Image (cartoon, rainbow, N blue to C red; front, side, top):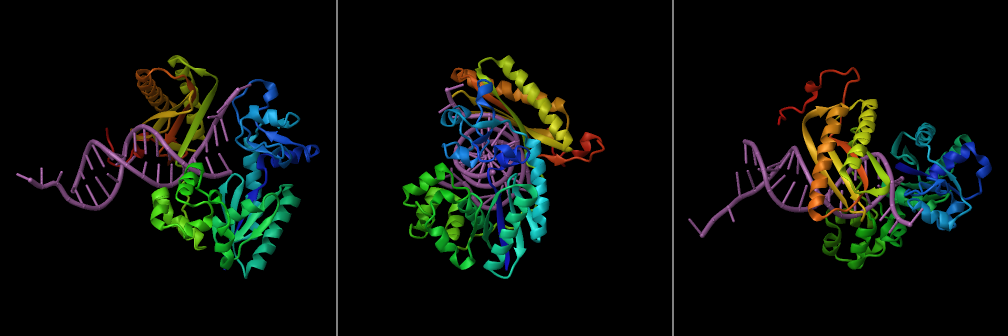
Length: 367
DNA sequence: TCTGGGGTCCTAGGACCC
DNA sequence: TCTGGGGTCCTAGGACCC
């Protein structure tokens, strides 16, 4: 039987940092912008379990984390380190299965043909030991024939554990868990489900399917199948390359004038174009988004007549789109901007040689 | 001092096409 | 009086994830 060993690294960014600073082990450590270095609008990226005991969590505003845990050791993020350690992790995992599917920087599914649940648990144990002894990284592992169930199980295994869910016990394992533990069910969906009487996954089997559908639309079938212990595993995904690349900037203080926003758009466009060039990616759609001071968002996008690769068309489209967003806002009376972002979409791989652009224009598209 | 940055997928209406 | 129908593209926004 094909099993998924769903590996989720514990406090991943913190764990990466502790490899070079082992003396901090056992102390509250937070990866994120250090509040003692000045005002910041940032959030916690990763917190050690010692810091979590103070209530510090990922995505918590730094100002609140500082109040909850003043003695924390703050470490600025080193994303290139985390990417390179993630490659080491995948290399290590490859020894333990037929296939390793990377699912995020700190999660991967190891798929392996194994005799039974006991054999799968034994491999999970070996993986954990290897990650710990060879890479000094703690992990949690969920074991199931189903990837979604593996992910849910890995959450229950944290920190440092292994949870095995044999196929015949899937429905009973899931039944008592809060609906919020299903990947894809966030605060809004959970609230809508609760309003039709669904609090736990098992409730999906007792509430009328039409009501589930009212609450969650096309997601309903997937949810009900999961509750039965027979999740519909989406057809194995061809990885087709990235769909979008973006760059964003949140201002230290909200911005009320267009020229300042245009300067930011210029910088972001340059950064984004450089990143796309590194990956040899062309783009066809440009989106500019503004987050206003009240945290609502407005965006404008434009699809160009063909695939582009340079900073110049990216920047000029982005500037135009920003002006349009700004005009629309002027009509309704001037909120200040908190964050601006530029996104490139409908990406296409370009040959690294740098041939004539027009040969990559979408077939038949003009305008 | 509330709420980063980089992503994915879904929905829904209008345009456009055959 | 009537008002096909199915498909795709574009755009704006919502929800969610790490």
